[in-house]
Amino acid sequence: MSLLGFRTTYELALLFTCLLGDFLPSTVKSTHGNLPRALIDSSTHWGVAFFSWAIIVQAKNYKEFAECLLCGVLAMGIDADHFIAARSLSLQAALSLSSRPFLHSTTLTLSISLIIFITGHILNKGWIKLLSVMCFIAWTSHHIRDGSRRGLWFSPIGSTPPIPYNLYVILTLLLPLLVIFILKLFNSDFMRSDLHRQLYVEAKSKNVLPI
Image (cartoon, rainbow, N blue to C red):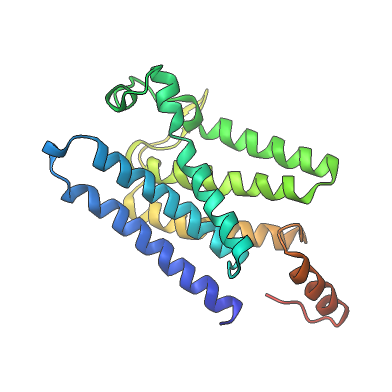
Protein backbone atom coordinates (compact mmCIF):
# COMPACT_ATOMS: atom_id res chain seq x y z
CA MET A 1 0.00 0.00 0.00
CA SER A 2 1.30 3.49 -0.86
CA LEU A 3 1.84 6.17 1.78
CA LEU A 4 -1.22 7.99 0.44
CA GLY A 5 -3.17 4.76 0.81
CA PHE A 6 -2.13 4.41 4.45
CA ARG A 7 -3.16 7.98 5.22
CA THR A 8 -6.52 7.61 3.47
CA THR A 9 -7.24 4.38 5.38
CA TYR A 10 -6.35 5.96 8.71
CA GLU A 11 -8.35 9.11 7.93
CA LEU A 12 -11.42 6.93 7.30
CA ALA A 13 -10.74 5.05 10.53
CA LEU A 14 -10.46 8.37 12.35
CA LEU A 15 -13.78 9.55 10.91
CA PHE A 16 -15.46 6.27 11.88
CA THR A 17 -14.06 6.55 15.42
CA CYS A 18 -15.50 10.05 15.83
CA LEU A 19 -18.93 9.09 14.52
CA LEU A 20 -19.16 5.82 16.45
CA GLY A 21 -17.85 7.36 19.68
CA ASP A 22 -20.47 10.10 19.50
CA PHE A 23 -23.30 7.70 18.61
CA LEU A 24 -22.75 4.98 21.20
CA PRO A 25 -23.50 7.09 24.32
CA SER A 26 -27.05 7.63 23.03
CA THR A 27 -27.59 3.85 23.12
CA VAL A 28 -26.68 3.58 26.82
CA LYS A 29 -29.66 3.70 29.17
CA SER A 30 -29.51 6.14 32.07
CA THR A 31 -30.15 3.24 34.47
CA HIS A 32 -26.68 1.88 33.64
CA GLY A 33 -25.05 4.82 35.41
CA ASN A 34 -22.09 6.96 34.36
CA LEU A 35 -19.46 4.23 33.93
CA PRO A 36 -20.45 2.98 30.43
CA ARG A 37 -20.60 6.52 29.04
CA ALA A 38 -17.27 7.39 30.66
CA LEU A 39 -15.64 4.28 29.18
CA ILE A 40 -17.02 5.06 25.72
CA ASP A 41 -15.84 8.66 25.95
CA SER A 42 -12.36 7.68 27.14
CA SER A 43 -12.05 4.97 24.49
CA THR A 44 -13.07 7.42 21.78
CA HIS A 45 -10.40 9.90 22.89
CA TRP A 46 -7.92 7.03 22.74
CA GLY A 47 -9.04 5.97 19.25
CA VAL A 48 -8.98 9.51 17.88
CA ALA A 49 -5.41 10.06 19.11
CA PHE A 50 -4.34 6.58 17.93
CA PHE A 51 -5.46 7.11 14.34
CA SER A 52 -4.30 10.75 14.29
CA TRP A 53 -0.77 9.58 15.08
CA ALA A 54 -1.09 6.72 12.61
CA ILE A 55 -1.83 9.30 9.90
CA ILE A 56 1.26 11.32 10.79
CA VAL A 57 3.72 8.41 10.85
CA GLN A 58 1.86 6.26 8.28
CA ALA A 59 2.00 3.46 10.86
CA LYS A 60 2.97 0.11 9.39
CA ASN A 61 5.33 -1.58 11.88
CA TYR A 62 5.38 -2.50 15.57
CA LYS A 63 7.37 0.58 16.62
CA GLU A 64 4.99 2.98 14.92
CA PHE A 65 1.90 1.20 16.26
CA ALA A 66 3.46 1.35 19.73
CA GLU A 67 3.76 5.12 19.26
CA CYS A 68 0.07 5.21 18.28
CA LEU A 69 -0.81 3.33 21.47
CA LEU A 70 1.18 5.80 23.55
CA CYS A 71 -0.51 8.75 21.84
CA GLY A 72 -3.88 7.24 22.72
CA VAL A 73 -2.84 6.79 26.35
CA LEU A 74 -1.73 10.45 26.51
CA ALA A 75 -5.13 11.52 25.19
CA MET A 76 -6.96 9.41 27.77
CA GLY A 77 -4.63 10.52 30.54
CA ILE A 78 -5.91 14.09 30.44
CA ASP A 79 -9.10 13.00 32.16
CA ALA A 80 -7.13 12.00 35.25
CA ASP A 81 -7.29 15.66 36.20
CA HIS A 82 -11.01 15.21 36.95
CA PHE A 83 -10.10 12.90 39.82
CA ILE A 84 -7.23 15.14 40.92
CA ALA A 85 -9.50 18.18 41.04
CA ALA A 86 -12.22 16.20 42.84
CA ARG A 87 -9.63 14.78 45.27
CA SER A 88 -11.49 11.53 45.02
CA LEU A 89 -11.47 8.28 43.03
CA SER A 90 -15.25 8.45 42.81
CA LEU A 91 -16.45 8.70 39.19
CA GLN A 92 -19.53 10.61 40.32
CA ALA A 93 -17.36 13.19 42.08
CA ALA A 94 -15.03 13.46 39.08
CA LEU A 95 -17.98 14.14 36.77
CA SER A 96 -19.63 16.64 39.11
CA LEU A 97 -16.98 19.36 39.15
CA SER A 98 -18.23 22.93 39.06
CA SER A 99 -15.50 23.96 36.58
CA ARG A 100 -13.16 22.29 34.12
CA PRO A 101 -9.99 20.80 35.62
CA PHE A 102 -6.55 22.20 34.81
CA LEU A 103 -5.43 19.84 32.01
CA HIS A 104 -8.50 20.84 30.01
CA SER A 105 -6.99 24.30 29.55
CA THR A 106 -5.80 24.47 25.94
CA THR A 107 -3.45 27.29 26.95
CA LEU A 108 -1.71 24.99 29.42
CA THR A 109 -1.38 21.93 27.16
CA LEU A 110 -0.11 24.01 24.24
CA SER A 111 2.46 25.59 26.56
CA ILE A 112 3.60 22.21 27.88
CA SER A 113 3.94 20.83 24.34
CA LEU A 114 5.98 23.88 23.32
CA ILE A 115 8.25 23.60 26.37
CA ILE A 116 8.90 19.92 25.60
CA PHE A 117 9.72 20.77 21.98
CA ILE A 118 12.11 23.60 22.96
CA THR A 119 13.80 21.25 25.45
CA GLY A 120 14.29 18.67 22.70
CA HIS A 121 15.65 21.34 20.38
CA ILE A 122 18.13 22.64 22.96
CA LEU A 123 19.31 19.14 23.85
CA ASN A 124 19.20 18.08 20.19
CA LYS A 125 17.13 15.02 21.11
CA GLY A 126 14.78 13.93 18.35
CA TRP A 127 12.75 11.65 20.64
CA ILE A 128 11.91 14.57 22.92
CA LYS A 129 10.74 16.66 19.97
CA LEU A 130 8.73 13.66 18.76
CA LEU A 131 7.14 13.42 22.22
CA SER A 132 6.17 17.09 22.06
CA VAL A 133 4.33 16.56 18.76
CA MET A 134 2.66 13.46 20.19
CA CYS A 135 1.48 15.41 23.23
CA PHE A 136 0.17 18.18 20.99
CA ILE A 137 -1.83 15.71 18.87
CA ALA A 138 -3.16 13.75 21.87
CA TRP A 139 -4.17 16.73 23.96
CA THR A 140 -5.45 18.98 21.19
CA SER A 141 -7.59 16.24 19.66
CA HIS A 142 -9.04 15.64 23.14
CA HIS A 143 -9.81 19.32 23.59
CA ILE A 144 -11.40 19.65 20.15
CA ARG A 145 -13.71 16.74 20.88
CA ASP A 146 -14.64 18.15 24.29
CA GLY A 147 -15.02 21.53 22.60
CA SER A 148 -18.00 20.25 20.62
CA ARG A 149 -19.85 20.29 23.94
CA ARG A 150 -18.22 23.07 25.94
CA GLY A 151 -15.95 25.05 23.61
CA LEU A 152 -12.20 25.44 23.97
CA TRP A 153 -10.90 26.87 27.25
CA PHE A 154 -8.07 29.34 26.82
CA SER A 155 -7.29 30.26 30.41
CA PRO A 156 -7.11 32.91 31.72
CA ILE A 157 -8.93 34.58 28.79
CA GLY A 158 -12.02 32.37 28.77
CA SER A 159 -13.81 29.82 26.64
CA THR A 160 -15.04 29.81 23.06
CA PRO A 161 -18.63 28.87 22.19
CA PRO A 162 -19.20 25.14 21.64
CA ILE A 163 -17.71 23.96 18.34
CA PRO A 164 -20.45 22.97 15.84
CA TYR A 165 -20.46 19.20 15.38
CA ASN A 166 -19.53 19.19 11.69
CA LEU A 167 -16.70 21.63 12.36
CA TYR A 168 -15.42 19.45 15.22
CA VAL A 169 -15.23 16.44 12.88
CA ILE A 170 -13.50 18.47 10.16
CA LEU A 171 -10.97 19.93 12.62
CA THR A 172 -10.24 16.46 13.99
CA LEU A 173 -9.58 15.10 10.49
CA LEU A 174 -7.45 18.10 9.52
CA LEU A 175 -5.32 18.24 12.69
CA PRO A 176 -2.85 15.46 11.77
CA LEU A 177 -2.64 16.75 8.19
CA LEU A 178 -1.82 20.22 9.52
CA VAL A 179 0.99 18.77 11.64
CA ILE A 180 2.37 16.93 8.60
CA PHE A 181 2.28 20.16 6.59
CA ILE A 182 4.10 22.13 9.31
CA LEU A 183 6.78 19.44 9.70
CA LYS A 184 7.39 19.42 5.96
CA LEU A 185 7.36 23.22 5.85
CA PHE A 186 10.20 23.36 8.37
CA ASN A 187 11.94 20.31 6.84
CA SER A 188 11.72 18.41 10.15
CA ASP A 189 12.85 14.80 9.84
CA PHE A 190 12.99 13.81 13.53
CA MET A 191 9.67 11.95 13.03
CA ARG A 192 11.23 9.49 10.62
CA SER A 193 12.51 6.04 11.50
CA ASP A 194 16.20 5.31 10.82
CA LEU A 195 15.28 3.38 7.66
CA HIS A 196 12.92 6.07 6.43
CA ARG A 197 15.53 8.75 7.17
CA GLN A 198 18.10 6.85 5.12
CA LEU A 199 15.67 6.54 2.21
CA TYR A 200 14.83 10.22 2.61
CA VAL A 201 18.47 11.25 2.38
CA GLU A 202 19.03 9.06 -0.68
CA ALA A 203 15.90 10.40 -2.39
CA LYS A 204 16.86 13.98 -1.55
CA SER A 205 20.26 13.49 -3.17
CA LYS A 206 18.42 12.45 -6.33
CA ASN A 207 15.92 15.32 -6.02
CA VAL A 208 13.06 12.82 -5.64
CA LEU A 209 11.55 13.26 -2.17
CA PRO A 210 9.16 10.68 -0.74
CA ILE A 211 5.70 11.83 0.31
